[in-house]
Amino acid sequence: MAKLIDITGKALSGEWGTEDESGDGIPVLRTTNFTNEGVVNYNDVVTRTITKKNIDEKFLRRGDIIIEKSGGSDKFPVGRVIYFDGDENTYLFNNFTGLLRVKDQDVWYPRYIFYSLFANYKRGGTRAFENKTTGLHNLKTDDYVSRYEVAETDKAEQISICEKLDKLYGIIKSREKELQLLDDLIKARFVEMFGTPYGNEKGFPLLTVDDVIEFTGGAQPDKKYFEYEPTEDNIRLIQIRDYKTDNYITYIPKSMAKRFCDADDIMIGRYGPPIFQILKGIEGSYNVALMKATPKMGNKEFIRYFLKQECLFNYLDGLSQRTAGQSGIEMPALKAYPFPYPPMELQNQFSDFVNQVDKSKFGDCLTIFLILHKLIIDYYLEIQII
Image 1: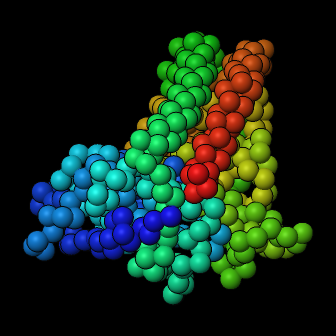
Image 2: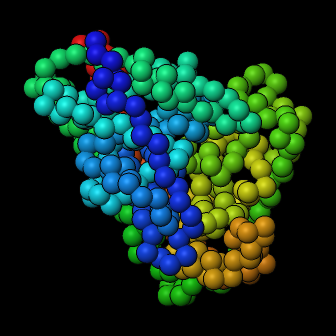
């Protein structure tokens, strides 16, 4: 085994600078650009004005590993890592993260070091190096880097291991694309059968959303009752962030729960951005950022896809109201929106089509996806015992 400190040296601290008022700032990666797959998410990279000198060594290069120094939760530890393979000498990283850069790449393959750290994080290896202050989870980075050990093997074997892991990851991504194509197929079938809701090209009887759907808003329990573990007396509190990640699952006493949803319900994100997110149900109670759409009449699957139409989203987005700095749905506008109402026979035909596609999505494709995902996690963990 080899000490990480001997491979990379101490983690370099990041730079945050000041607000970029000119628009000519430097892109800075934050913990929001971390993913649970160890891949950089470039969708929301901020730019900052950095005036500090002598920071050339902090500009990211391919093969750099960025480690999370502050973040996490009571359930998920701090210490995630991402592998940088973007444009060199373009990005910096902020002060809640640190940079690990392999010093001798003739001996150590940077991606191998990344996978080793990733595997250690997945099995909770950073938990022992956490500090909790004022609600934040901080990694004792210097201590972690100086004590962590990497399994030694020759560089050819390191590369071979990483190629296998990369291949598994590539297969997973291709399966994700297949699932997306099936979603696109359902959308195309909806337009083929019903046209666009706003245009009503098929000449269906015209109602309003309020005629067809009943909306029920959520309630906000006191945060002092929030828990992170399920018990017989607790129920899951569903929040917008729960649809993006399971990192912060919250539970509340059943006595505090006011509204309930299950896995088949139509849930709508009330606040954004983006506003008007049509979400799958999750069993539990839901808070004020969500509301439940219950059909008064018609087929639930048809109504779900009616609500997903881009023309409706664009209409509501243009009328969105802002409360406490957040965009939100203008409910009177939503309720008054025209609802072309096809015969139940057509609605049911569409629902049957969706169910058939879902069998493919959650049968072969999803099964393969889950198997591959387990394989890649297992292989991550095996790196440390090779």
